[in-house]
Image (cartoon, rainbow, N blue to C red; front, side, top):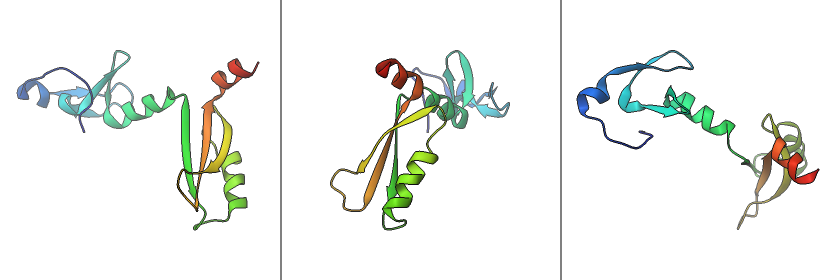
Length: 111
């Protein structure tokens, strides 16, 4: 997986850079710049997740009962997010979706 835009020659792409979050050495070709910092792909994905405004989690009713799904959706939501809704997934008879919104955005809209 390669993230980013621009061109880099093979020699530069194979050069090692240090991830500014975890400190691991990765090839420039498999690193990413995010908000001015050089990150490995794992840390890049974690940072991107922090800025998502909405998150959908899915639960399968064939694996656990609906009552347990509702409790899990309420109690085990992502940190910093507010549960908006639990509903059937589109065109499904057994999958449920829990929709979360970043709490600060939710409070701005609802205050």
